[in-house]
Image (cartoon, rainbow, N blue to C red; front, side):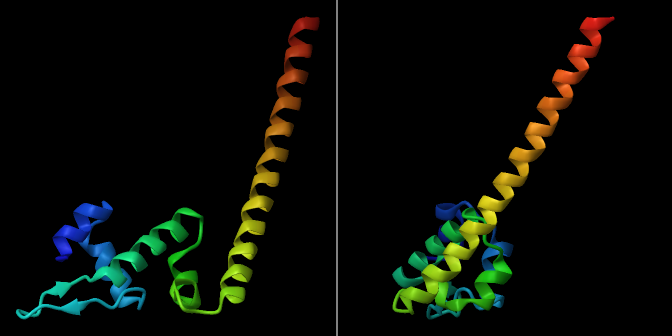
Amino acid sequence: MTIDEVCRSFHIDKERLQAYERGGLLNCGKDEDGSPDYGEGELRRLGMIHSLLNAGLETTTLEQNPVLLDEEGNCGERVRILKRQRCRLLEDIHARQRALDSLDYLIREIKKEGAQR
């Protein structure tokens, strides 16, 4: 696939795709005129990049942990990294729940004060 076809298929802009290449996340081949040519393996890898980013991982995390994108890589290490991310997300959810609980408490208290006036 050409860079334009990949951008349309994955709904990303060229700059982001090129940034993935510069960061070592993608390593596409070149066609006879030197233009990027994305093969099936790179398209699968790009799909995995999108899934991992949607799961809350940062691009720098992917760059620092290439095993995450290696289909033949160490399964245990990949799972360990993903579980660590899951724990971070869960901690964030709990923190947000505490913030919601605090807001609910404040709303109740303000309503009580208003009803007593």
